[in-house]
Length: 163
Image: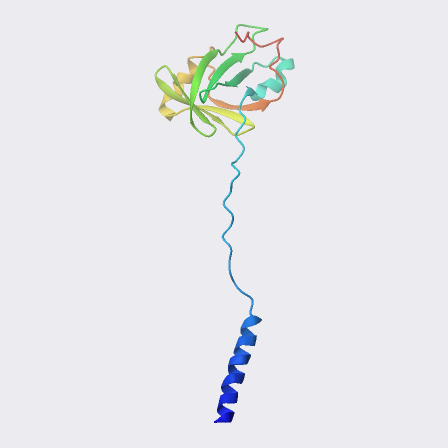
């Protein structure tokens, strides 16, 4: 009986020792993110690809965006006006519908202004309403398309007045 008790006590002792050396596999839940993503900065000037060739006489369109206090933006579209009559002109406010996307009503049709940090895309909400973007441009032009962001002001020697 003594041998049996000794074996049981020794077994418990070994079991206790071995459990002390086992690494615990507790997984900690990741800390909740308290930082929010930085807000997308959209204020500034955006231009068509032809802007880079303006000194060679190419026609171009520029869009100036200014954020307002109420989650809306002011949009001013102007084009080259030094050599001929300006081709595109628009002054409009648009309302934020989600991060980076604003909506304005032009001629009763919804138009989306989508920003990604380096560019602005202007497109109708419904593809069949694409023609509404031609109304603000002459000579077959359209406001539809992608405009790249520039850091400088629009070329004051060429642009139509931003009144």
